[in-house]
Image 1: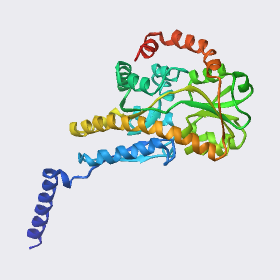
Image 2: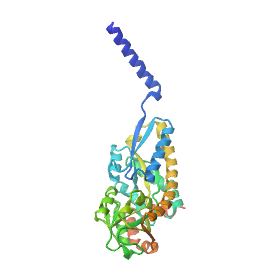
Image 3: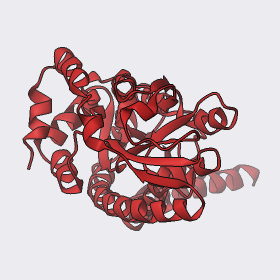
Image 4: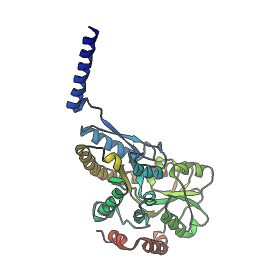
Length: 327
């Protein structure tokens, strides 16, 4: 009797197991965690959560979980982790990517992107395709390009109008030699530092300021530790949403296609949202007491010759000219 009961139990288990294989709805969905250094209210994470909802609606057995607020470390950690396969997916800026794929330095050049339409044409055209291939060769598959808007200098000492106003100010930049050279050429003292450490450094007086888009200054509350935001508009480096190739290769063709299609929609969504957020952020920062001023952009641009010469000496002029000639 016991033996017959055991066989019946095993048989039932086998049927259930086979049923799960035959019916994908009974199989557990795959969860992909996407890492981000910015806080939950930042529009990048708003965009990523929107993306997660779109992927879930495709019903292809994929869940996207957004881990914001630098829960998994800094952007360099994410990039290296995706290459090694220990991080599944992340949203990162192109500047730290250049530490692993040098050609990405192109996007850190000052005064490179003319406006939003130029940005979209660059990342969606042959230049974008070239960089997608470079990233894939190093273990990253780019699903979407993010527009970060123009970056401006903020600090707690004084308004910045001319390069002379930057003298003596320690300004945080991303961990990119090209960005260091740019802020130094602008007249400041560039200090590379992880984004997650910036607020504390300003609060403790280790640094005088930073440089970022208005939406970031607002969402990460830098107005609490800085008084001035000056519209230098010196950088407009994009971000990317990338998935580790080891994670990508573990997906079905249907899942991959869903991520490609929804990634394209995510790119459009985020670029439009960046424009809205940037304008609203400036108004809110001003309402919170931050002093916002226009800067002599031409005077800063005129100082960038050595930065461009250094770039072309290292990487050649082909990619730079491709961006400049993109209409």
